[in-house]
Image (spheres, rainbow, N blue to C red):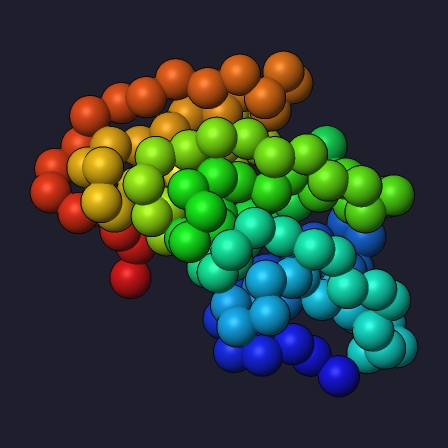
Length: 133
């Protein structure tokens, strides 16, 4: 069974795993795309809103709207790391060629750029309330 308020649902085309952010229960449900069975549920930050996958590195990036950070999941072990972001991150995109992750921060009017190899961040100014819809 999924958590409360499922919100985003990308598929890793390499591993055939599906990742569902559960905004109301602060976790991510991992589903086997072949059997449609739940593999596990992984804790995330507060109000996980968006999720993106780098299929090359098998890393999953979850923008946590309520805790102003990104949960980075290892797709093989489901282990997590937390990376700071701006206020109210609500969208995330991955460039698998450069291994850069881009997170829009709605309230802080900027974009956090995460280096996928080191998890180091940089901030780029953006317009008012950047988001993806």
